[in-house]
Amino acid sequence: MNILLLVWNYLKAKPLNTALNIVLLSLGIAVIVVLLLFNKQLEEKISENARGIDLVVGAKGSPLQLILCNIFHIDFPTGNINLKEAERIAKNRLVKNAIPLALGDSYGAYRIIGTDQRYAELYKAEVAQGEWFSEELEVVLGANVAAMTKLNLNDEFASAHGLTVGGHAHDEHNFVVKGILKRSNTVLDNLILTSVESVWHVHDLHTEEDHQHHEQDTSFVASPLVPSIAAGDSTKEITSLLIQYRSAMGAIQLPRFVNGQSSLQAASPAFETARLFSILGVGVDILMAFAYVLIFISALSIFIALYNSLRERRYDLAIMRSMGATRLKLVVTILSEGVLLTLLGSVIGLLLGHGVLMIMTAFVTETQKAGISGIVFYHEEWIILAGSLLLGVLCALIPAWQAYRTDISKVLAGN
Amino acid sequence: MVTIKNLSFAYGDQKGISFPDFSINKGEHCLLLGESGSGKTTLLHILGGLLRGYSGSVEVAGTELSALSETALDHFRGKHMGFVFQRNHLISALTVEKNLIMAPYLAELPVEHQKVDDVLRSLGIAEKKHTKVTELSQGQAQRVAIARAVFNNPPVILADEPTSALDDKSCAQVINLLIQQANAHKATLLVATHDQRLKDMISKQISLHG
Image (cartoon, each protein chain N blue to C red):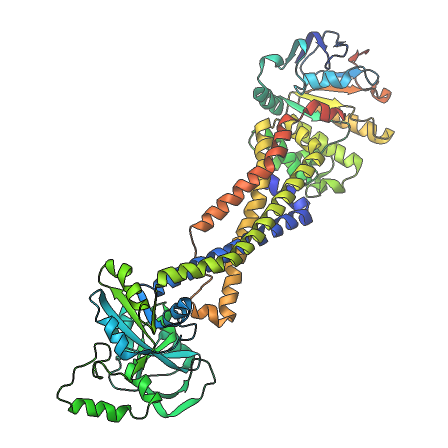
């Protein structure tokens, strides 16, 4: 026999009351846990995906759209930019590194990105099987793409025009899988990488001839962005440029310089994602408020349960005193009852939260693609646990104080 | 074992009750007789250390109760006294066995599980060990209360109207069991009652008049 067993027996004696209190609290905790896990992982993924990219330059439109499209690959492009204009930005002395992106095709639910090897280096991605693409129409698959499409090395596939499933198929140009990337837990896992020329190739049948024409030209100066093309080519277009600054000065001058050009705009991933979070934050706040209401109700319910059971248990408590229990022991017993209730509620709530997220990731492919998992633990969960234990103590405080003050003689005499 | 001198007690502003001096030896049993309102329960609670703030001297098992602190009194009560009340006041959330185990647990004495069977057997309710106390009859519950009172081998057993809610047959059984258990544990039994049926059972009697 110990306090825990005694308290457990008391809780067991009122199974419905106990269950109601635990369910209420665990639902509130579960909502908080789901929001916590979701938000935290989303923030982590976003900062991971935006790592090393200081600025995105693309066609005019919504800056948020530019970021969503070119960094997270979830929205559609704002339009194309002229390669010649992009080169001018890339050559700016404030730019350390400029990576071109050409979007336009997809395979299944996965985007084909025309770029170069530096794009993969941003995410420290390595080739797990095969090798990097070198010729036109050769591709490297992200780890998720390879797993979901079951494409293997040297397999061929035809891309579809556009970024949505069911676009018009470019079946006259088959891509060849040359390599598969190691899992990097970034957006790269869900992309198919190829050269910028490949993307042009499937959209423009004359690329081949142009290409040869340039190689015969003695005054050929390679474009800093796409070396097979002559610098200053005014016909080629890309979707965007990912830019790394050379120094902090870049952050001050470059966006203004880019936005001053009539057809270009620059968007900062850090600024736009912060803006995105402040927009999403409203919904999160409402859910959070809902969770706090649930927890408040459960606290009230636990308080009422303890308070009522104390009234019924006045004789029990007096008897326990007559058997030698000190007042402190009664206080500890009642506090333990509150704490045990909230402990059970919060542990079940934590498990429930992780469970819900695990089920969600198992059934919703979008969360899989975002790399969100239910089997991740944050130290904030300890705070939730500690907080709910404190809640248990608070709920039991008044009943415990009353137990402390009980006049045992009066209770036992039946007055 | 129990000695009181010049004892009086007042509830708030009311007129105080004075109790006659008396002394009970070790192993001796005693009836506290009186009508309701005569202060039987008050005296029993004072003797049991449940009620403080009296004037005079109360000595139980060689200890002056007023000299003990609240916590020390709790410990003293747990080790030296067993209580049986009119309504048996068992802890309803627990089984018979766990109700008995509460006695050594709360008194902070070593818990001997074997003793549960022994005590229950001597009271003829061995088969009720795992029964919930809410499923017991009045008589059975009172036996469990007696078992709990004697469980720690206290030198003093205090009973407050243990029989007044019982019919004649149960009344005789309960008082016999109390005397028998008190004798077996060499304890002093003090019964506060207005139940005339007990007058012939215990010879030493103290009458209280409010």
